[in-house]
Length: 395
Image 1 (cartoon, one colour):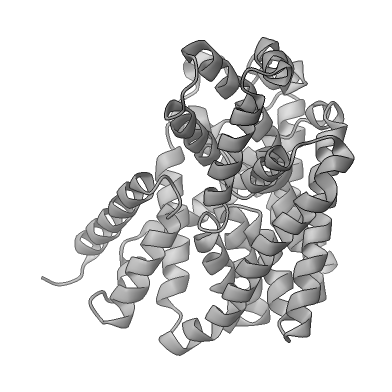
Image 2 (cartoon, rainbow, N blue to C red; image 1 turned 180 degrees about the horizontal axis):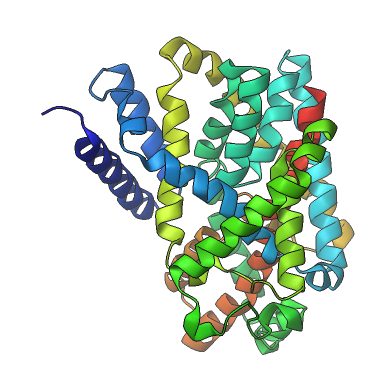
């Protein structure tokens, strides 16, 4: 059978579907992107799959759309009040990530891998959008390294989910039947958000009954075009990626009522856009030969090891300074590297397997979900893009 559009599209979708099943079966330890990446690497290397399959599937075009609208979407979710009301948590996370970043940089610099430390820190704490931006920027600097951010994104869950699950279980057991758990469970769920604006009524250009998938995607693309028109020239001169200003545009648009928060979740298009985003990873893999891939393995392993070691060291040093338990601190930090909604799914499955009263279990899920929303916004969605853009200046 010739590898035309239909064959290529079907094959990629089947690979993604299989990867999703394996990821769920492994409780997200083996992430979708890791399984998918391994399948593609093996398939391309063994010549079982043609490298032309990815562009022929036409999914890359959807990936470009996803790349543009996801950053605007993320900007709409930024809530300054939410951060202001959580100063202790933000200080702990920020200081922890700073110290851990310095550890990574020092260790990898001693091994002659300084550039990979700078490249990897942003994608390590961010999602597919951060990896896509970093990869895109590297194509202009050093094309041979453009796969590295995607490789970091692939191993992200492998080096964080096991420790998150362990620390979550220990945190629950320590708080079980204690006053601290009772205080947590008696806390109103919306209060734990720290900001009423996070749950405010939707605002937008049209009433809710007129907001279709085309409305949301069209509006997001209009804002993306406005970002390119207003900031495109400026960002190029300053060396700032236009994705950074896209966050600002999304934030401002939401504040003035042009678009509501979380628009993609209401557009019924998030799944398709995620497929498109994964196709960008597939495209980069298809453009990298085996020798180029193997050259990136050593820095990837070193970054992963120093990241895990640095996390434990930082938690050991700082948890008592903020009156947090070791387990709670580790849970908070590792949740930053997983992101929503995956971290929430892992938490719910883990708690369902524990011997807790049903009411306590549901209350704990609700309050901890608010914690993960905060860490996701602070690090995974926004912070990673800003950090990545700053560190790229030093390459």
